[in-house]
Image (cartoon, rainbow, N blue to C red; front, side, top):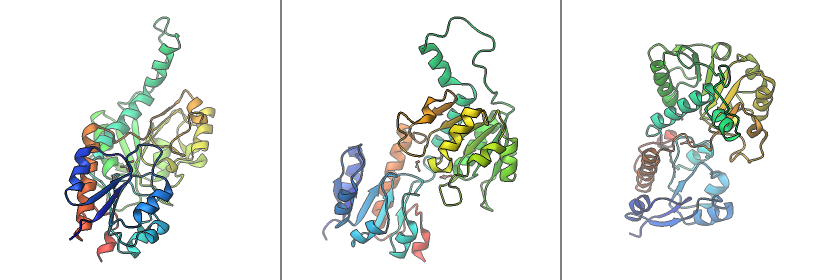
Length: 324
Ligand code: GLV
Ligand code: GLV
Protein backbone atom coordinates (compact mmCIF):
# COMPACT_ATOMS: atom_id res chain seq x y z
CA UNK A 1 0.00 0.00 0.00
CA UNK A 2 1.35 3.47 -0.80
CA UNK A 3 1.98 5.67 2.23
CA UNK A 4 -0.70 8.25 2.99
CA UNK A 5 0.15 11.85 2.07
CA UNK A 6 0.42 14.47 4.75
CA UNK A 7 0.96 18.22 4.54
CA UNK A 8 2.53 20.06 7.49
CA UNK A 9 1.80 23.80 7.44
CA UNK A 10 4.80 25.09 9.40
CA UNK A 11 8.47 24.36 10.00
CA UNK A 12 8.77 21.54 12.56
CA UNK A 13 11.70 19.90 14.36
CA UNK A 14 13.18 16.96 12.43
CA UNK A 15 12.32 14.64 15.33
CA UNK A 16 8.63 15.43 14.78
CA UNK A 17 8.81 15.15 11.00
CA UNK A 18 10.60 11.79 11.31
CA UNK A 19 7.72 10.41 13.37
CA UNK A 20 5.47 11.27 10.44
CA UNK A 21 7.91 10.12 7.73
CA UNK A 22 8.00 6.65 9.28
CA UNK A 23 4.40 6.13 8.17
CA UNK A 24 3.59 8.88 5.67
CA UNK A 25 4.78 10.72 2.62
CA UNK A 26 5.35 14.14 4.14
CA UNK A 27 5.31 17.53 2.49
CA UNK A 28 6.20 20.55 4.63
CA UNK A 29 5.76 24.29 4.27
CA UNK A 30 9.18 24.70 5.83
CA UNK A 31 8.91 28.33 6.93
CA UNK A 32 7.80 30.21 9.99
CA UNK A 33 6.58 33.31 8.22
CA UNK A 34 4.58 34.33 6.46
CA UNK A 35 2.10 31.52 7.15
CA UNK A 36 1.43 29.19 4.24
CA UNK A 37 -0.31 31.13 1.44
CA UNK A 38 -3.94 30.11 0.96
CA UNK A 39 -3.39 29.03 -2.65
CA UNK A 40 -0.54 26.72 -1.61
CA UNK A 41 -2.59 25.24 1.23
CA UNK A 42 -5.45 24.48 -1.18
CA UNK A 43 -3.00 23.00 -3.69
CA UNK A 44 -1.28 20.80 -1.10
CA UNK A 45 -4.65 19.74 0.30
CA UNK A 46 -5.67 18.49 -3.13
CA UNK A 47 -4.06 15.03 -2.71
CA UNK A 48 -3.46 15.06 1.06
CA UNK A 49 -4.92 12.37 3.34
CA UNK A 50 -3.93 14.31 6.43
CA UNK A 51 -3.23 17.93 7.34
CA UNK A 52 -1.04 18.97 10.29
CA UNK A 53 -2.17 22.54 10.93
CA UNK A 54 -1.52 25.63 13.05
CA UNK A 55 -4.07 28.04 14.52
CA UNK A 56 -3.17 30.54 11.78
CA UNK A 57 -4.77 28.47 8.99
CA UNK A 58 -8.42 28.85 8.02
CA UNK A 59 -9.85 25.33 7.71
CA UNK A 60 -13.28 25.65 6.14
CA UNK A 61 -15.68 24.32 3.49
CA UNK A 62 -13.56 25.64 0.64
CA UNK A 63 -10.54 23.76 2.00
CA UNK A 64 -12.53 20.55 2.50
CA UNK A 65 -13.91 20.87 -1.06
CA UNK A 66 -10.35 21.12 -2.35
CA UNK A 67 -9.28 17.98 -0.45
CA UNK A 68 -11.30 14.98 -1.65
CA UNK A 69 -8.97 12.41 0.01
CA UNK A 70 -8.80 14.11 3.40
CA UNK A 71 -9.22 11.73 6.35
CA UNK A 72 -8.03 13.85 9.26
CA UNK A 73 -6.99 17.36 10.29
CA UNK A 74 -4.64 17.50 13.25
CA UNK A 75 -4.00 20.89 14.79
CA UNK A 76 -1.05 21.63 17.04
CA UNK A 77 -3.08 23.73 19.52
CA UNK A 78 -5.82 23.20 22.05
CA UNK A 79 -7.99 25.95 20.53
CA UNK A 80 -9.58 25.28 17.14
CA UNK A 81 -11.74 28.33 16.46
CA UNK A 82 -9.96 28.57 13.06
CA UNK A 83 -11.54 25.26 12.03
CA UNK A 84 -15.15 24.86 10.89
CA UNK A 85 -15.82 21.70 12.91
CA UNK A 86 -19.44 21.47 11.70
CA UNK A 87 -18.28 21.27 8.09
CA UNK A 88 -15.70 18.69 9.13
CA UNK A 89 -18.29 16.58 10.93
CA UNK A 90 -20.63 16.73 7.92
CA UNK A 91 -17.81 15.27 5.85
CA UNK A 92 -16.88 12.71 8.53
CA UNK A 93 -13.46 14.26 9.04
CA UNK A 94 -12.19 14.10 12.64
CA UNK A 95 -10.33 17.15 13.94
CA UNK A 96 -7.45 16.60 16.35
CA UNK A 97 -6.27 19.13 18.94
CA UNK A 98 -3.89 19.14 21.93
CA UNK A 99 -5.65 19.66 25.26
CA UNK A 100 -4.11 18.64 28.57
CA UNK A 101 -0.41 18.77 27.68
CA UNK A 102 -0.36 22.58 27.75
CA UNK A 103 -2.67 23.22 30.70
CA UNK A 104 -0.07 23.85 33.42
CA UNK A 105 2.32 25.73 31.16
CA UNK A 106 -0.47 28.04 30.04
CA UNK A 107 -1.71 28.52 33.61
CA UNK A 108 1.86 29.37 34.68
CA UNK A 109 1.95 32.05 32.02
CA UNK A 110 -1.47 33.49 32.89
CA UNK A 111 -0.10 33.84 36.41
CA UNK A 112 3.11 35.37 35.05
CA UNK A 113 1.09 38.06 33.27
CA UNK A 114 -1.18 38.59 36.28
CA UNK A 115 1.80 39.21 38.54
CA UNK A 116 3.77 41.23 35.99
CA UNK A 117 0.78 43.55 35.51
CA UNK A 118 -0.12 43.77 39.19
CA UNK A 119 3.47 44.64 40.12
CA UNK A 120 4.28 46.69 37.00
CA UNK A 121 7.34 44.66 35.99
CA UNK A 122 7.53 45.80 32.36
CA UNK A 123 7.02 49.45 33.32
CA UNK A 124 9.83 49.07 35.84
CA UNK A 125 12.23 47.94 33.15
CA UNK A 126 11.17 50.78 30.83
CA UNK A 127 11.74 53.21 33.71
CA UNK A 128 15.35 52.06 34.02
CA UNK A 129 15.92 52.08 30.26
CA UNK A 130 14.62 55.64 30.10
CA UNK A 131 17.22 56.70 32.69
CA UNK A 132 14.54 57.63 35.22
CA UNK A 133 15.92 55.47 38.07
CA UNK A 134 17.71 58.23 40.00
CA UNK A 135 16.93 57.16 43.55
CA UNK A 136 14.56 54.95 45.57
CA UNK A 137 11.17 56.66 45.69
CA UNK A 138 8.66 55.30 48.23
CA UNK A 139 5.52 55.79 46.12
CA UNK A 140 6.95 55.26 42.65
CA UNK A 141 5.76 52.25 40.60
CA UNK A 142 3.49 51.02 43.37
CA UNK A 143 1.16 48.27 42.20
CA UNK A 144 -1.49 45.88 43.44
CA UNK A 145 -0.93 43.02 45.85
CA UNK A 146 -1.53 39.54 44.51
CA UNK A 147 -1.99 37.84 47.89
CA UNK A 148 -5.34 38.57 49.47
CA UNK A 149 -6.78 39.89 46.19
CA UNK A 150 -9.86 38.48 44.47
CA UNK A 151 -9.25 36.61 41.22
CA UNK A 152 -12.22 36.28 38.88
CA UNK A 153 -11.99 33.61 36.21
CA UNK A 154 -14.07 33.69 33.06
CA UNK A 155 -14.09 30.00 32.22
CA UNK A 156 -13.30 27.22 34.66
CA UNK A 157 -12.13 24.53 32.24
CA UNK A 158 -8.77 22.79 32.37
CA UNK A 159 -6.70 25.96 32.21
CA UNK A 160 -9.00 28.08 34.38
CA UNK A 161 -8.93 25.50 37.15
CA UNK A 162 -5.12 25.23 36.95
CA UNK A 163 -4.94 29.02 37.40
CA UNK A 164 -7.33 28.74 40.37
CA UNK A 165 -4.96 26.25 42.02
CA UNK A 166 -2.05 28.62 41.65
CA UNK A 167 -4.14 31.47 43.04
CA UNK A 168 -4.93 29.49 46.17
CA UNK A 169 -1.18 29.13 46.79
CA UNK A 170 -1.03 32.93 46.75
CA UNK A 171 -3.89 33.20 49.27
CA UNK A 172 -6.20 34.78 46.72
CA UNK A 173 -9.98 34.55 46.86
CA UNK A 174 -11.15 32.83 43.67
CA UNK A 175 -14.53 33.36 42.02
CA UNK A 176 -15.53 32.21 38.57
CA UNK A 177 -18.17 32.33 35.89
CA UNK A 178 -18.76 29.50 33.45
CA UNK A 179 -21.67 28.58 31.19
CA UNK A 180 -20.97 24.83 31.46
CA UNK A 181 -22.83 22.97 34.21
CA UNK A 182 -19.95 20.55 34.93
CA UNK A 183 -16.58 22.16 35.43
CA UNK A 184 -13.52 20.97 37.38
CA UNK A 185 -14.01 21.64 41.11
CA UNK A 186 -11.21 23.57 42.76
CA UNK A 187 -11.51 23.74 46.52
CA UNK A 188 -12.48 27.19 47.72
CA UNK A 189 -13.33 28.55 44.26
CA UNK A 190 -16.83 30.01 44.26
CA UNK A 191 -19.16 29.97 41.26
CA UNK A 192 -20.89 33.34 40.76
CA UNK A 193 -22.62 35.32 37.99
CA UNK A 194 -20.72 37.19 35.28
CA UNK A 195 -21.80 40.49 36.87
CA UNK A 196 -20.35 39.41 40.21
CA UNK A 197 -17.03 38.38 38.67
CA UNK A 198 -16.77 41.76 36.98
CA UNK A 199 -17.78 43.79 40.03
CA UNK A 200 -15.79 41.95 42.69
CA UNK A 201 -12.50 40.95 41.04
CA UNK A 202 -9.17 42.69 41.46
CA UNK A 203 -7.85 40.49 38.66
CA UNK A 204 -10.03 39.12 35.84
CA UNK A 205 -8.47 36.32 33.78
CA UNK A 206 -10.10 34.96 30.62
CA UNK A 207 -10.03 31.19 29.98
CA UNK A 208 -12.92 30.54 27.59
CA UNK A 209 -12.73 29.10 24.08
CA UNK A 210 -13.60 31.61 21.34
CA UNK A 211 -17.21 31.04 20.24
CA UNK A 212 -20.00 33.38 19.06
CA UNK A 213 -21.06 33.60 22.75
CA UNK A 214 -17.62 34.59 24.04
CA UNK A 215 -16.71 36.97 21.19
CA UNK A 216 -16.09 40.39 22.85
CA UNK A 217 -17.27 39.10 26.22
CA UNK A 218 -14.99 41.88 27.47
CA UNK A 219 -16.43 45.02 25.86
CA UNK A 220 -17.18 48.65 26.73
CA UNK A 221 -20.12 47.59 28.96
CA UNK A 222 -18.40 44.78 30.84
CA UNK A 223 -15.24 46.90 31.30
CA UNK A 224 -17.42 49.54 32.97
CA UNK A 225 -18.64 46.93 35.45
CA UNK A 226 -15.08 46.20 36.58
CA UNK A 227 -13.26 47.96 39.43
CA UNK A 228 -11.25 51.03 38.45
CA UNK A 229 -8.26 49.27 40.04
CA UNK A 230 -8.85 46.01 38.15
CA UNK A 231 -6.28 44.15 36.06
CA UNK A 232 -7.46 42.19 32.97
CA UNK A 233 -5.45 39.15 31.84
CA UNK A 234 -6.13 37.35 28.55
CA UNK A 235 -4.41 34.12 27.50
CA UNK A 236 -7.41 32.67 25.62
CA UNK A 237 -8.12 34.14 22.18
CA UNK A 238 -7.79 37.79 21.19
CA UNK A 239 -11.37 38.36 20.00
CA UNK A 240 -12.80 37.58 23.47
CA UNK A 241 -11.77 41.20 24.20
CA UNK A 242 -12.86 44.25 22.21
CA UNK A 243 -9.39 45.77 21.76
CA UNK A 244 -10.53 49.33 21.05
CA UNK A 245 -12.94 49.32 24.01
CA UNK A 246 -10.04 48.08 26.14
CA UNK A 247 -7.81 50.83 24.79
CA UNK A 248 -10.39 53.44 25.83
CA UNK A 249 -10.85 51.82 29.26
CA UNK A 250 -7.09 51.78 29.94
CA UNK A 251 -6.65 55.33 28.67
CA UNK A 252 -9.58 56.72 30.69
CA UNK A 253 -8.93 54.81 33.90
CA UNK A 254 -12.07 52.66 33.63
CA UNK A 255 -9.75 49.79 34.61
CA UNK A 256 -6.14 50.02 35.76
CA UNK A 257 -4.17 47.52 33.72
CA UNK A 258 -4.23 44.79 31.09
CA UNK A 259 -1.84 41.99 30.24
CA UNK A 260 -2.59 40.20 26.99
CA UNK A 261 -0.93 37.19 25.37
CA UNK A 262 -3.56 37.13 22.62
CA UNK A 263 -4.85 40.08 20.65
CA UNK A 264 -7.21 41.18 17.94
CA UNK A 265 -5.80 41.35 15.35
CA UNK A 266 -2.98 38.83 15.61
CA UNK A 267 -0.18 39.57 15.05
CA UNK A 268 -0.66 42.99 16.68
CA UNK A 269 1.00 45.64 14.47
CA UNK A 270 3.88 47.45 16.18
CA UNK A 271 2.04 50.79 15.81
CA UNK A 272 -1.20 49.55 17.45
CA UNK A 273 -2.64 52.08 19.96
CA UNK A 274 -2.60 49.48 22.79
CA UNK A 275 1.21 49.43 22.59
CA UNK A 276 1.40 53.15 23.38
CA UNK A 277 -0.12 52.62 26.84
CA UNK A 278 2.17 52.19 29.86
CA UNK A 279 -0.56 50.18 31.61
CA UNK A 280 -0.83 47.47 28.94
CA UNK A 281 1.61 44.56 28.67
CA UNK A 282 1.43 42.46 25.53
CA UNK A 283 3.22 39.21 24.63
CA UNK A 284 3.08 37.42 21.24
CA UNK A 285 0.82 34.40 21.94
CA UNK A 286 3.45 32.44 23.91
CA UNK A 287 1.49 31.13 26.91
CA UNK A 288 2.14 27.47 25.99
CA UNK A 289 5.66 28.17 24.71
CA UNK A 290 7.90 26.17 27.01
CA UNK A 291 10.36 23.90 25.20
CA UNK A 292 8.86 20.79 26.78
CA UNK A 293 5.23 21.72 26.22
CA UNK A 294 5.60 22.73 22.58
CA UNK A 295 7.26 19.32 21.96
CA UNK A 296 4.42 17.56 23.80
CA UNK A 297 1.87 19.42 21.70
CA UNK A 298 3.73 18.52 18.50
CA UNK A 299 3.86 14.82 19.49
CA UNK A 300 0.22 14.71 20.47
CA UNK A 301 -0.66 16.27 17.12
CA UNK A 302 1.36 13.48 15.43
CA UNK A 303 -0.53 10.84 17.42
CA UNK A 304 -3.88 12.36 16.42
CA UNK A 305 -2.84 12.52 12.78
CA UNK A 306 -1.56 8.94 12.59
CA UNK A 307 -4.68 7.60 14.31
CA UNK A 308 -6.90 9.47 11.86
CA UNK A 309 -4.98 8.15 8.85
CA UNK A 310 -5.50 4.58 10.10
CA UNK A 311 -9.20 5.20 10.65
CA UNK A 312 -8.73 4.84 14.41
CA UNK A 313 -10.37 7.10 16.97
CA UNK A 314 -8.20 10.19 17.63
CA UNK A 315 -6.71 10.31 21.15
CA UNK A 316 -7.97 13.94 21.31
CA UNK A 317 -10.82 14.74 18.98
CA UNK A 318 -12.45 18.20 18.83
CA UNK A 319 -15.58 16.91 17.04
CA UNK A 320 -16.38 13.51 18.63
CA UNK A 321 -19.85 13.74 16.97
CA UNK A 322 -17.99 12.45 13.91
CA UNK A 323 -18.00 8.97 15.49
CA UNK A 324 -21.77 8.79 16.00
C1 GLV B 1 -2.77 28.07 21.66
O1 GLV B 1 -3.27 29.16 21.74
C2 GLV B 1 -3.54 26.87 21.68
O2 GLV B 1 -4.75 26.92 21.47
O3 GLV B 1 -2.95 25.80 21.91
C1 GLV C 1 -9.35 25.29 27.09
O1 GLV C 1 -8.69 25.65 26.13
C2 GLV C 1 -8.82 24.53 28.20
O2 GLV C 1 -7.90 23.71 27.97
O3 GLV C 1 -9.26 24.80 29.33
